[in-house]
Each structure stands twice: as structure tokens, then as C-alpha cells.
Image (cartoon, rainbow, N blue to C red; front, side):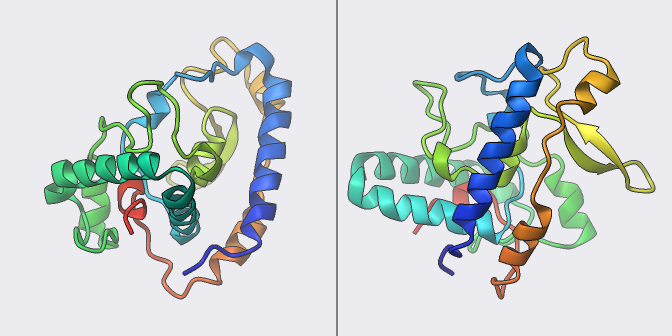
Length: 201
């Protein structure tokens, strides 16, 4: 499915929220170009993230075909290496939903570099189209935690070293969950995948 028009608004809100949170965090936020810890390990992306990546790849095939080819080659190499252990359908890239598949995914490709991570520069080659997970990593965000799924703040372990709970809370990045949920209703198939599969035509 094509990328919903409302995704542009979602990204604008996310980018503004990140900039504000980063301003409040100051030196507590250790994220810098070339810091790639968060760029290693597989993570699930939803259909909105996948559509955004596919739209970016389609544009790159016209504007920067060499880069698009490099990204596709990296994605294919990633799938060739990790596909045999993929906890889902390795042909479609759709993650399995069973408890067994979810458990397997916790240990799947944990140390593998993301195929969009440029090995020469340490930068993301599709930064403007990166998934939501990438856009919130680093700053404190609300997550469900514990056996009762109580809300808690989570942030990159390299950030906010030595900060108090109140200092961390003062830098929380609010997330537009309602808008994201509204956009996701436009997809008839809400299955999850991983970045590598979303880069292929």
C-alpha cells in the first residue's frame, strides 16, 4: 500500500518533539552522528514504517540509483545471512505472531547492523525515512513496563548517565500515538516485518 498522506504530518510532529526534547536534554543526550549502538539488532516495524521505507527506496531508484542498489544489496545480504532463522515467513518477510515466534524474535539477529547503516560513514542512508522506533531512541519516552504494563520512561543506556529521575522526566518526548494509530487503520494488513524486507521491491 502507498504511504498515507498523513505520514508527513506525523513525521513533522515527531521531528519537532525530538528537537524540543533534545534541547531540554542538552548534554544528557549522548546521541551523535556515528554513534551506531541503536543501529544494531533486528526490531519489528509496522506497515506505516515499511511503506515509508519503500517510498524512499522508490525515490532513490530514480534520484540516486547507485545508493538504491547498494541498499538493496545490503538488504539481500542481510536476509541471506539471517533469513534461515527468521521467526516468520522468510519469503514475505512477515513476522510470525505465535508466542513461539515472538520468543524467537527476542534473540533474532541481535548484533546484526541495520542494512541502511552506511558501513563507511556510520550514518543512516535513509535517515529522513527512518522508522518511528529510530526517531524516539535516545530520549525518554513512555513505555509499558513490568507485569502490569505500568507506564515507565525508557531511554538509551548511553544517555542521561548520572541524571536523576526528575531530570530524566523533564526531558520526556511526547509521542503522537493517536495520529499514528489513525494512519495504521488505513492498512488492511497490519502485519509487522523488519527493515531489510522493506527495502526490497
